[in-house]
Length: 286
Image: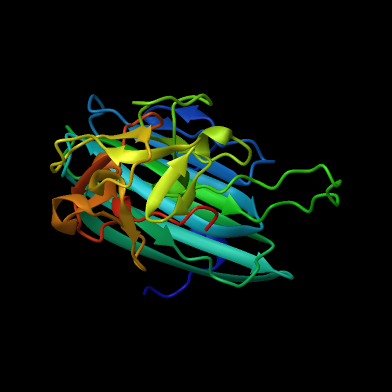
């Protein structure tokens, strides 16, 4: 891994391009400071002759994880990217950085360089290799929850969720559920009943209905809610690598976020198991 540069050099890596707001070929949109999960985005359109897609997070407070995703239009295009992470605790700074050229789509975890940091500064720079390529980069920062007052006896715990790629959860499009309701990805919340699940007897259960691969089951079959009946197309095994493996089709298909979209409302499918990031999900509440 490249040798750490001091914070001043890390901040200078963007060469004057680091600024929050909207610039030509650059969009940076931080989430609310009070959120436990914040997303930052930048974009290069295919009409841009050349340029950088830059994300600058000057101070992420009490972060616990950083997830970077880079997608392109068209897909499977080479992109150059550079990232820098500088974290500080008790006034001492520790950091690292790296530069790579890879093909989209990309999804990687950036290191939190010190245990329990007070804050971290992040800089992400993405460049086109082919000037006709459109690029979107998304950085998801998960921070430790702020201390909350002691709950009253009537306070309810956060619902158990099934967390997937890039801060998304499995759920339904709305809070009501019925037979044939789509199972989709949503940005993980903290209280939404649309993301509440339990895993019992090999079945993923939401609002009394089960996550079901719509038959006849095959690669690409979409996942819906259906009355629980113990059928092979709604019986899953959760593996240690995070895969939910469907019993139907000889156990060859896994719960899948198609094309690693992470786009709210995208319907989940079953697809050939490949131990890929878009097939890794937590157990409810995990």
